[in-house]
Image 1 (cartoon, one colour):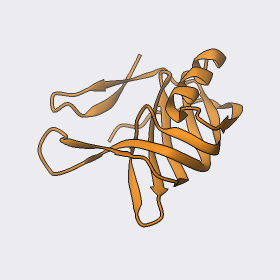
Image 2: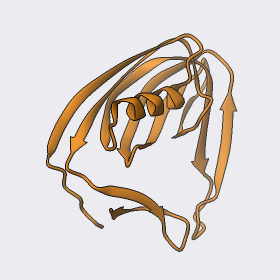
Image 3: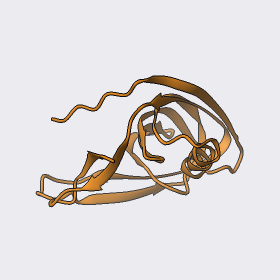
Image 4: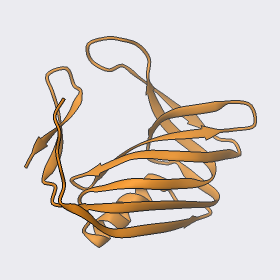
Length: 142
């Protein structure tokens, strides 16, 4: 385990996404526009018409992922994760009328009515995410 400590919290960003807006793409765009490099997501709820995510499928040394696309009425119950060096890494909990799903949020996940997302900037971190020899993401100091 490696530990990295920031110097405190900065701006609080609240996003109100509307019909047909893309979740991950919208978050990335706002982070870039605001110049936020590191943040934590504190809350995310909403409704989706399309959810795209990936999840692990086994215990191999390098990750093997299954990519899933759902196009149904979907509730977004939660997003968890961090933004490191401007790149969000979020996992979500979603449900349609019959099943609950979890996985890593991917591009093309699309709002049906609204999504409300809040992020808090972390000051004083100088990290980047890189892949190790097993293709697993780790943090390095910049």
